[in-house]
Amino acid sequence: MAAASASAARRIRTGIASGIVECANGRLAVVTFLSFPLVFIRWPITRDVPWVNLLLLGLTVWVAITGFRRALAASPGRPLRLIAPGLAAAATFAVLGFWVFTVFVASRRLPESAGSPRPGDRAPQFTLANDANESVSLSRLLSDPGASRGVLLIFYRGYW
Image (tube, rainbow, N blue to C red; front, top):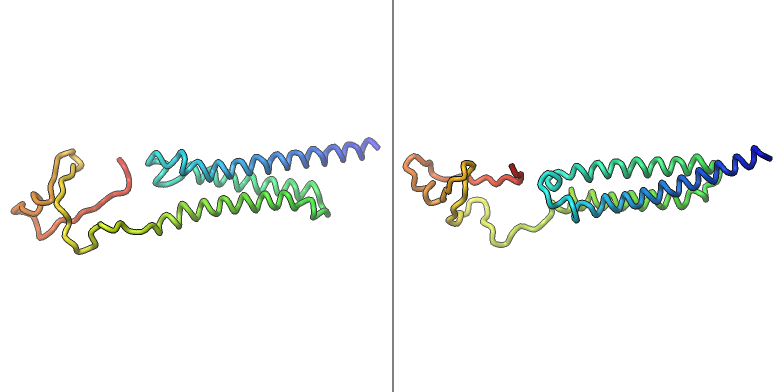
């Protein structure tokens, strides 16, 4: 009798632990999903390569797999008891999959600016600061006697 009650108590504790893990995992997935557009997009170090969100993503996947494995171990031979943890893990992977698609795929499909010059077009006159913080104008670069036939403009995405 004591062994049966200890086994039942262990199953209850394991079930509660699996539920807590899946609940925490759902919250972690939402934090991973929302933290990039609401928090980490503000700073270049976390916007250009979303490494913090990738770490959160890895942690979320690990917790989802761990929670599902605990639920699987807690109820062998009872496939109906795996429905809730399975749905929670599937929802977690769906949210994370949507985040990965949005950040790495859909953001590359943004439309071009309607007023931007095309390759080969003449650039409009401008004045910009160079790496030494000196003003450099396009007309001055083109009128320089030592200049070649054109000017190559390179825009870096990064910040330094």
